[in-house]
Every structure is written in C-alpha cells, then in structure tokens.
Amino acid sequence: MRLLSVDPGRVDFGRRRFRLRTGPARGVLESAARAFLSGLNAAIEGRTVDRLARRIGEVDPAHRGFACEGAGMGCALLDLVTLARGRRVAELLSGPGSAHPHLVHVGIGWAYARLRLRPVAGVPTADPLLRWLAWDGFGFHQGFFHADRAIGRARVEPGLPPGARAVRDQGLGRALWFHECADPEGVALRVAEFPPDRQADLWSGVGLAATYAGGADAAELSRLVGPAGRHRRWLAQGCAFACKARQVGSVVPAHTHEAAALLAGVGVAEAAAWTDRALALLDDGPVTLTRYQRWRTETSRQWEER
Image (cartoon, rainbow, N blue to C red; front, side, top):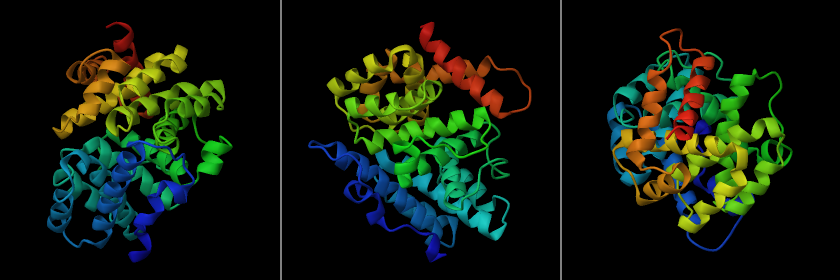
C-alpha cells in the first residue's frame, strides 16, 4: 500500500516546473496541494474510517475539501486494487467526506488516472450525477503530473468520447490554474494554444479553480474576464460549480466571495443556486454523461439570463 502514497515533495511547483512568481499565489496553491496529499496518504495508511476522519479533521477547514479530494483518490485506489466495489468510497462519502461530495468524486478520477485506467463506469457506490466528476479529476491528474504532454503539447488520450473529453478538459483547465500559478495572462495564453473546440471547457475549469482554490487578488481575477471572450459563460459556469461545492462544505473563504462577484457577477449564494435551478430543469431520465453535460450547459445559461 505504501507504493500508492505520494511524496509531498512532488507537489512543489519548482519540482513540477510550474510557473513561479512573486506574491502569495504559490503558497496558497501549494498549500491546497499539500492538503490533498494529506488526505490521500491518510486514506492509504489508515485502517478505519474513524482514523481517516481524525486526520481530515486536523486539516484547516478552508482546505478540508482538498483533503477529502485526496481521500477520495486514496479510497478509490484501494477499492480498485482490492476489487472492493467502492466500499471505502461509500464509507468516505457517508462519513468524513459527506460535506465535500463534489471533491470526493473528483478524487475518484485521480485514482483511475494513477492506475492508467479510465473512469468509464465509475465506482459503483458513487453518486449517479456527481460520479461524472471523475473525468474532471482524471483531467486534473494528467495536467498536474503529465504537464508536458497534456498542457505543453495539448495531447488528449485517444478514443475518448466527446462528453468525456469535455469534462476531462474542465479538469485540465483547473490544472492550468495551478500550472500557471494563478497568473491571469499566463492562463489566458495557455488556453489560447489549445484547439478552439476545447477552449470553453478549459475556461470552465479555470473559473472553478480560481473560485474554489484562490490564489489571485481582485485585480488579477478581473483580468480573466476579457481573455475568456466568447467563452465568458463557461468561466461563470465553473465559478458557479465552485460556489456550490464551497456552500455544501459550509466554509466559504473570502476569495470565493470575491471570485463570485467578479467572474459570475453575483454573490456566492446566487451562483450556487444557478446549479440547483439548472439541475431542476433536467428531465428524470438516466443519469448519463449527456445529462451531466446538460447540467453544465443549463448552469451557463443561468449566467446569461441573470
């Protein structure tokens, strides 16, 4: 099991060859990454859900979602390699991860990527709708640990259906925020290097990471809006998803309030409500990847109709 854990040094931006710049951004984002690894390694090393809960409880409340994301990866890794059919993930979601279900499901995708698998069916006990966030986690993993290929060469894994690639690219957009150390100009230039049909999903991920993880001040956040251009609605959609995740987690930092006002043009509560109203507009059919994509699209329309 120790082979599944990750050395905390692997999230150092210098070691990863990410953008390094002055100011607080690097410290903010590296702290989030270290909280993620704390949750991952606790899940790998722990033997009971109570021990895992104690370890997650030791993390700063503002970073507890990242710890649950890491724990989601760790629990999914153990479930996959032991053929446990999602038992540990289910325990996490009903226990210490109950306040951060979005992040736990993203963490599941990290596990698949780490094992060089694809989250086609998802962990059996995962939420029918949120389980598609595993593709987001898959994309973030590729951007974070395989940046030269996934970001530098804009490569995508062969054979991905369009819906899976779209959510995967949302995760890659989140990774871009870390890769460019929350620098708005650097992020915009990176997104512009990708094919036009992938840029909307990348901007969605940028909005999500900027709102949830932080790292940019008000002036820097404002400089994201112009470059997003015709993808402005997707920047707002990602922001709304982050607001909802923060709201469910009951800890909404100042940077999330600031991002909601600047990227979505509304308060956190209203942006989060967009995701609820968008979900209510969907039919009651099977919770397919297409339905998840419609949720994203309807959320972006909430911004247009505000």
